[in-house]
Length: 295
Image 1 (cartoon, rainbow, N blue to C red):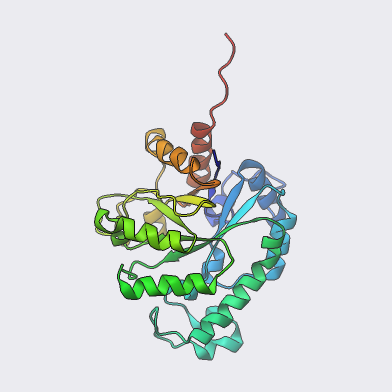
Image 2 (spheres, rainbow, N blue to C red):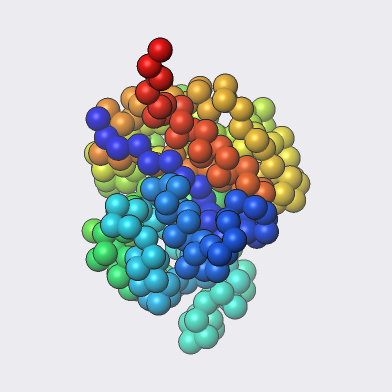
């Protein structure tokens, strides 16, 4: 049986930091991470989607966490085909990025340079054994088809040798008529599939399936079940407090994945206030309940 790690998609969310989850004396950068790592064995880094990581942060993250802790790191937006602001690139690369661009409108040489800097900054984290996976979250506009399949394969080739997990935001990838083909694509590249929990009443709803496409890892990201997905503010989209019943729906799927992969990462992205850490703690308790008290 593989190890199941439960955590959240941020430990620095502004509302979480401003709330009372971090105790007095643990609210600086080092204290927050150490406090978080004492509660959960994995966390997702989403800042790397908005800007390239730094070697210094990788060293500090490794220094402030125990050897058994893992970071799942989101790939930079340009590497996944998302629109990217020129200002988010290092100054010497900005002129190479068109102001308007799509997944196939970026110079491959620029993508190679960005990848080299992205992966180079994360090398200390990987060397220290703290890197769980790189999360490639592809945009909703990446609909399944030959061009999209080729794009995913190019991403895999660029990240050859690195652990990689894939979350598709277009629901067509995991609809019944396409799911087997999608799973085969990921398995062929040793890419872990990332399942999604979200409201299932929207046109953008991704089916809540959890295929195991890599012996290394399977993952689930809980986005919350807000009906405002795609229309409301960030707070509207992610504001959801999971109930025990909603979490329990995933227990058979998570345990079945753990029977096939060495690790399963269960990450909560409903980052409004302390909703994510409360849901993660509740899921940990459901997966590993305390032994019954002797009568």
